[in-house]
Image 1 (cartoon, one colour):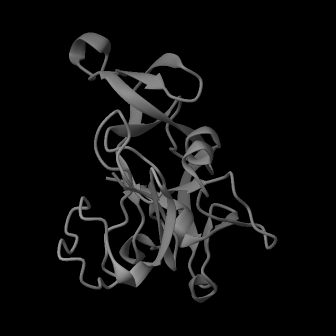
Image 2 (cartoon, helix red, strand yellow):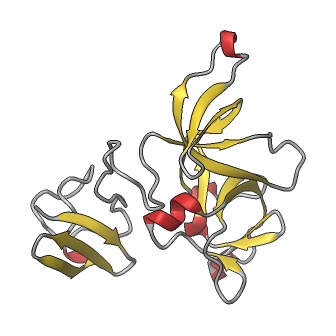
Length: 195
């Protein structure tokens, strides 16, 4: 059985028991992806969903290797800070009046239980999200030679390197494929937004 290993901007990489297959991205979509063309007909990459094969915890992952049941958590609110670090976690207990509105989460990198009121379900940012003042989450673990933060290159990096939350402060360089988040430059593909 083949399963999608990764999407790149130009190619689809499929891993099977007989090896690795690389196909042009427009040539096909994984039939397990929501909204995919089950017939195998060419799919427009601009409108194609970016999903990879789901992990053992269930559900597909998105373009940043976030599982459908992942949250981002923080120990403090963004409030008037320029940024706060956030971590990927799984919810263990929903917040309630009995827990002072704190949820219990399992921090996947540090393998620790954490109680917090500061948690978000997130998704990859879209062009419509790139507005001055909007809160976004940027991936810190992949900076290019121009000091622009880029998206994670693989699942391990995405889940163990830092993510941070801040507000978009400038979009005038969007044509250069970067926006200013707090005082840092981030590629739009490196950004997530709270849902």
